[in-house]
Image 1 (cartoon, rainbow, N blue to C red):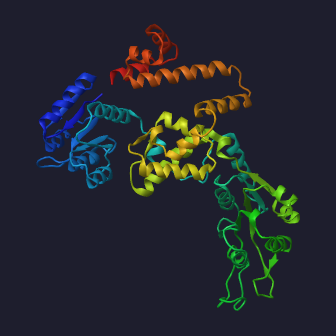
Image 2 (image 1 turned 90 degrees about the vertical axis):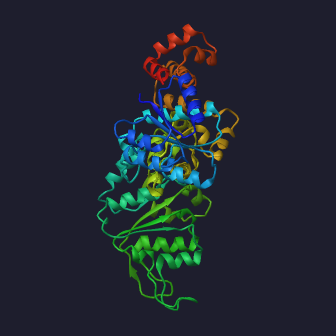
Image 3 (image 1 turned 45 degrees about the vertical axis):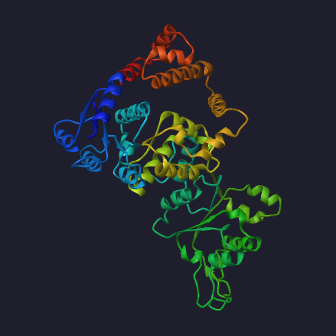
Length: 469
């Protein structure tokens, strides 16, 4: 592993780092001037760079810029005694790994360097380097069923009813159905029937003639006409007012409609895809939704699973949305630590994919470091997890057991016990920098026991790596 470079014109600061890094067994080099470090970059590079921000001659921000041009993935920690917002913003905009105000606690600084070292050793997945923009993400069996259904419907113009919880991606599925249909070259028009008042919704759907009502100064084509020969997506169809349900039924039955205030029938050559998060059968029983319209819409039903039903897709979704948010803002993509990823995968996500996207956008803007830990997650996400009667990790364990039983697995106790021990020991070794005796003390087990378990669990290589760092 390459050394850590420390750049600071203050000799006492360099001395503090020299002593602390020597004690920790971390190789280092020190420089009094940023220009000296820039010159050295021609022949070598550090594993991590720690630099003051204000120095004679070349500044730390200029050094940061030079380093990022040549080594864009190199973690850079910027130090300054001037703890002002402008410096912090400039450092992060320049791609700094972290911002360390002076005076600082030495142990805190060393811990920060260790996190930066871990980051520098972390492999950059190829998929994150150049993230594509797939239509719908999912590798879980439940999502594969959705993909197969889209494929089977590719050449069909049948009406489709998509059901699923809010935020699960129903419009994405509707767009995919359109994109893979013979109507792909024609318009895809979407309207949320729950988002506007009844009178306005009628005009939006069917258009209106000039003078049909106060303010109707000109004829207006509705969504049905705009979607001619294409696809009309009616989202939240379960909230459609009763009299509009009747008008929609007439369009689906005979293929014609009238503009508001109009007397001339208009032919509708449109494929209708409807979606709802509600139980339409229950609304039919309650008299809130027309049964004949329900049967007209329910020609082919496509159920979209919730995120809870495809937890194995959560890491894929999180990585994708972190990369997407980073591209939109123009910054380097954040990455979730193993612990943070496991934590997110264990949550119920009542807002489904939309909620995951929102959290990832929040992390891109607000998380203090490139590698996101559990403590960096939004407070409300951690509060929700802590709100139940049992600790969240027990809830996650319970769900994992249920998933394995549902898949028909046997020997579940042995597998999970091994994973449990492996996680405890590996996290203890990370905490102690690979020192086994200290890790054993943290766990309350003997030195011989931890040595034997490290070998049994295949942690030798990881342990040796942690110890070397």
